[in-house]
Length: 121
Image 1: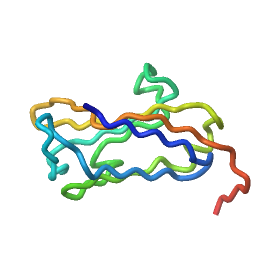
Image 2 (image 1 turned 120 degrees about the horizontal axis):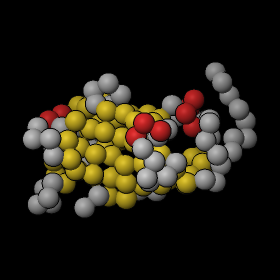
Image 3 (image 1 turned 180 degrees about the vertical axis):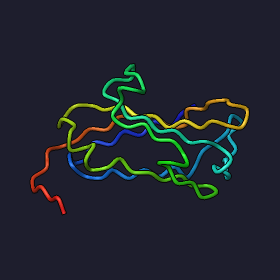
């Protein structure tokens, strides 16, 4: 079963970091070798939006860094700057194993607030 995490104190135009460091397999055992999986992240306006039309689609190793038991990635400020305050955005994180089996390990909703001060550097 996927873990659900909702984030509501995010600010438009900010970089949003993600960390995946604790994943359980179907037996409830912690998977400690994420580097044996391909990790995928998708961020969309609606849960049914196609991947091609989504706001962000990342995969390891190109956009997601994995070191043994931890995966990290960021949604860039340029992406969040184009979102709307108060609107929910949906994401999920999936793992694909060497047998091409897909496991959704995290889902959630991101909600952003308007910036008060806008910094570009």
